[in-house]
Length: 327
Image (cartoon, rainbow, N blue to C red):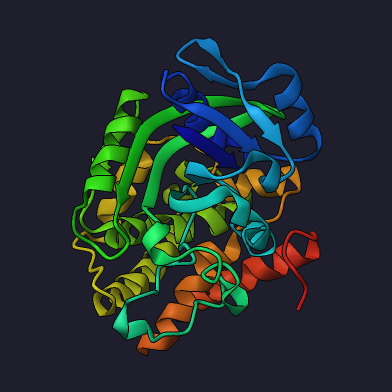
């Protein structure tokens, strides 16, 4: 089975190395710069369970050189995908599965969802450039529940979590989801094959869309955000707005914000991915985590003053640091 990782960062390496340990998997990676050099020289590396796993990988900066794959795992930061998507066509054959292992709202989320209309979500798929390259029938939705960081280019370090939720974008079960789930389970992941993958994406986002940007604004770990009663209530108010949006799109959340905060507290003094990006000077995934929520809210007629506030503040911070596009 030919598997290509597009975006050999933390999550891409986490998935790629574990799949490569299966005898039937031949691993490839589309990469560039120092990551490409590291993969070619030292392979794809992952610190996991007290040891460093190393996977042989066919690494290239050319999709055409890698050719058609059976599974393409897209593990890019969301802002990078619109520009790269047109170049990925050589990876796709008639039966290729595309698995986006990315934060936030994916480009396909609004497709076949009558309440959102027929136009692509501009916040995550500007001009429809991504949906023009990947048909909905190629995609299997994915939610990652794991914390992984990069030690250096080509070398990831697992911290916690092994969960992957996968499912058909249009809902229900399928033979291909079950087959992919079995493959991922053999690679050591804790796999859930969901019949409501849109809900699973929305539920994870329901917490991340506040904790990520507020931590990036304040520089505080999640335990400190929750310990501050004013910050916690601001986040709860934004979550109540997101829960109302969810009711309009078939993703009603049956928990309260306090229920979710109790789950988040178990992570302790944890740095969110957006805070890590700010500290490392990397572009922030604001549109996938917050901008898309605002766009969906506008389409279904839900007012979002608290979500608007966190978006505006984080956008301005990102622009001031050169981590989010001006204008």
